[in-house]
Image (tube, rainbow, N blue to C red; front, side, top):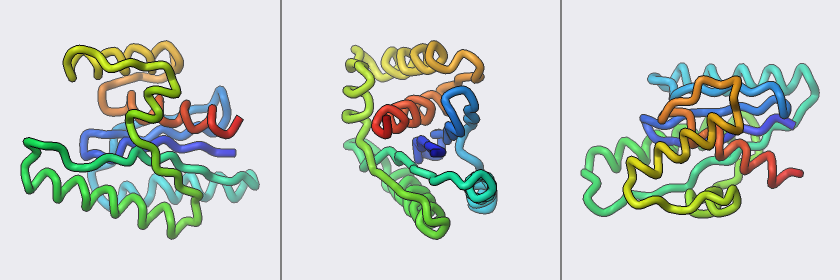
Length: 151
């Protein structure tokens, strides 16, 4: 079973767990074509290995104070991701940040910066072979949450 964790923001990332030891993670690709190619590569691998693909997509919404343009861009990216994933026949589960963080035992920190750095540190602990950044940390943790749900 291939498990994908996605933080869908423009500054988000994608993590692919091919197995407990084979993991790939990266920042969100910049173009629609690059996003599509990324998931097509996973699909090709899964077909070759006769594996199913399960995606845990962070379900987020606009927040107070967020600008109209950034909210629209975020929604557009989220819709693009869902469309590609559905087209490839992947099973998709939406998961809120509160749900995956609670399941992984992560409590909210005082400030956003402290919280994001805590997530990055935890992802680095759980995935020591990955170069963890603020862009791929959430995706790695979402993939770990997804893997735990399957077990």
